[in-house]
Structure formats: C-alpha cells, structure tokens
Image 1 (cartoon, rainbow, N blue to C red):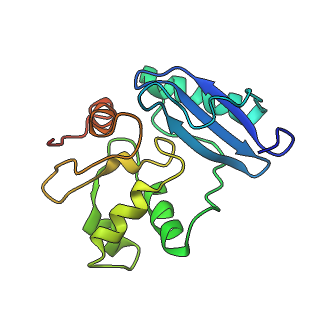
Image 2 (tube, rainbow, N blue to C red):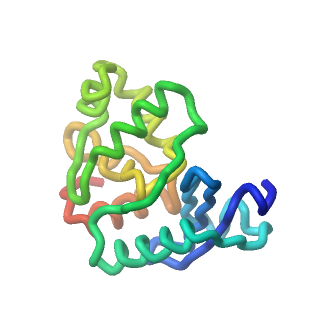
Length: 166
C-alpha cells in the first residue's frame, strides 16, 4: 500500500476503533478493531476528503442521527458471486433485515445459503454496506466476521432496532 494510491483513517466508535481505506474510486475497506488490533495499525494515517466524509457520516450513524450513507464504495476486490451478494446488501436500508436464503433468492441464487453466508462474511466494507442486517431465517445471529463477532453484530442490530436472537 502506498500512501499516494491508498488513503487511511482511523476513528473511535462504540464498537471499537475503525480503520477505513480508500482509493480514488471510493471506500475500499472498513475494519473493526478485534482484540485491540487493526489490520494496518502500523501504517500511518493518510486521510483523504472521502475518508473525512466517511468518518463524519459514521459518527452521525453511531450518534443515531444518520440512517444511510452517501459515500462512494468500491467493491472491486471479490469474485463475481461475492460482488453480487455485496450489491444485494447495498439495497438493505437502516433497520431492514433479510435472511441468507432470501438474499440468495434476491440475487438469483436460491438454495445457496451457505455460500451467501461466506460472501456476506467477506464483505470488505461492513456497516456502510450493511452485512449485519442478514440473519438466519429464525432471526438468529449465526456469526459475524467484524470486531468482536456476534456481540458486535448484536450491537449494530440493536442500534438499528432490528429484532434478533443470539
């Protein structure tokens, strides 16, 4: 990663520190602190205007005054299948929930719940692209790859008023 191509910013949040990267096309990744660590913690911050805007909008989201993001997101790193899942996630609004199976049906891949789960878990831009809004058919949280895992997902669901079971 070179700072002339990729920008980096970190910010505090109620679910732990966040680390966001972007290039000229938009947001590339959002990582949630896990066990006190971030993936690029040794890399100096190099904020860009889009990352400052992302930090502002995330702050508003966590404060409860923002329910949607107006940010360019670049979901280029992933298979065609993963990208179709991630684009399906982009259609979920604040407070909406979908099951893995229904998400599979929505993108034309019914019966592929397990593969959908893997693609959801590989989402490079959680929160902004709301992968936390996907639950099992019975409303149960089956996992979460960001931050502290299930407790992080439960916090995000509670924040959005989404009923769930752990």
